[in-house]
Length: 117
Image (cartoon, rainbow, N blue to C red; front, side, top):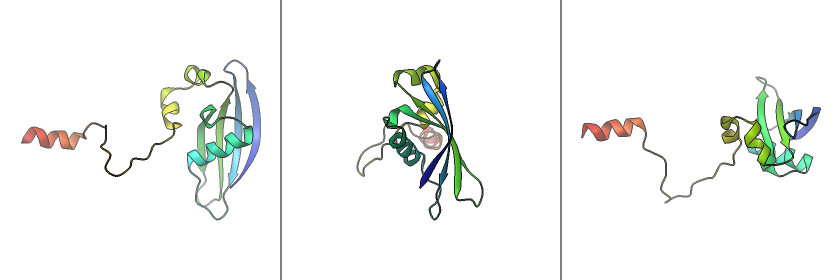
């Protein structure tokens, strides 16, 4: 996976840098969002929490993806500038181990079955 920076713009109002980039993944499938964020964090020498991936798209049949990322100076300014759904999309996913119970609420179908009984 090779990352090329296409453009950089400083946004002093939000305390971030807006970056457009391109990822070449020749023999590999489209990289995961977390992998791209980790590579960009290494590129900009920042913590992965300060990298917010806004868009990331691959053209059909292509081995090249384009994306936009916001690189923040401080983690506190992310909550002020980004919508909640973008922050949630960029949070690290925690994998569950076998035997751990889910804290999620039951799905609607399960609730309907419980009501019928």
